[in-house]
Image 1 (spheres, rainbow, N blue to C red):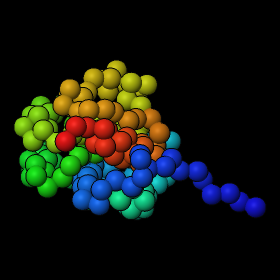
Image 2 (image 1 turned 90 degrees about the vertical axis):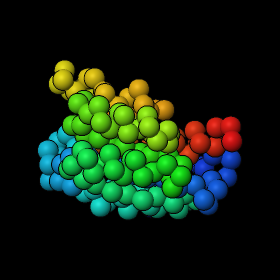
Image 3 (image 1 turned 60 degrees about the horizontal axis):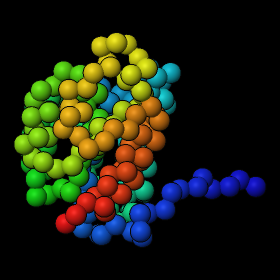
Image 4 (image 1 turned 90 degrees about the horizontal axis):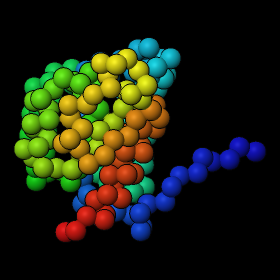
Length: 165
């Protein structure tokens, strides 16, 4: 008899229904499932988003998930997040290591952000070890494949619940 995978409970019950999280994925993540599956796995970005939506519903959180290969588009979405979203999950992909523009956008909007990665950048090539966006983020989740997004959502919800209002 198959057992259902255990899920961590919501922090102190479901989060307020008004909690809104913006999920942004950067360059080449639309290729998940086909792109280097030995590193990134076989799950598509649509599959990741579906799992996130399911977990968000359990937590009482509304998510909006977007992907772009364009740094400026990601900056536009971050810039528009203030007052519309309570938190951001950002997998900036290769822009993690190069983008002062994304760092500046995150600092400017002051919306709590969790940096997300499917792989563990520190266990890969040396040029992936440094994150330009990390100082603008409240936390980082990496190395758990597609689960990184779900774990980041759970962590962000807990972080937001502890934050003084």
